[in-house]
Image 1 (cartoon, helix red, strand yellow):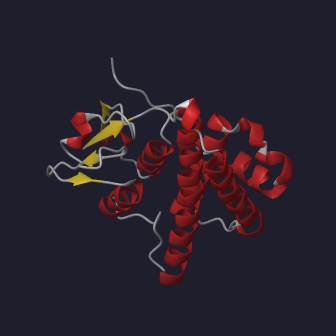
Image 2 (tube, rainbow, N blue to C red):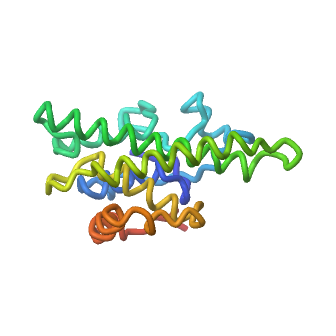
Length: 202
């Protein structure tokens, strides 16, 4: 398998953590990618018309995207339980994944507004609205994050979201107002898959 790779993409990180948890890291070759909503990487577009990372090329030559699809595919070929087999547990995990992805979507839109848009066209209310979504997600996770010991896709997604906030939005200081989430993130970050660093081979 081959994966278009960007070192700062939280969605790529999500896929790679899933792969590591499933014992599939060594079966995935990382491909260089420069995905951008403005300057599109044509090497990705040739396989994925959206031109986004992550995009996974299966051994059969099928292009899979986005992170939700790729993670479920990896879980399926590993016959594992990151997407629980029990129906109630599965839907709880998928719902948590959706909220984590929503946090990431809002954070990325805020990042694009402040980092990519020309200064004269900045729309501060747009950025504020996206950050408000992030804060709403954090508040919900603070109150409802699952404490059970069954590790699943929702936990991976949330952890990647929190790590992205650390990378791009440290001014939010989310730990200060979310002590339960802070403790949860500290514990989950001890997993080998979260500590691992990925890079392209020379």
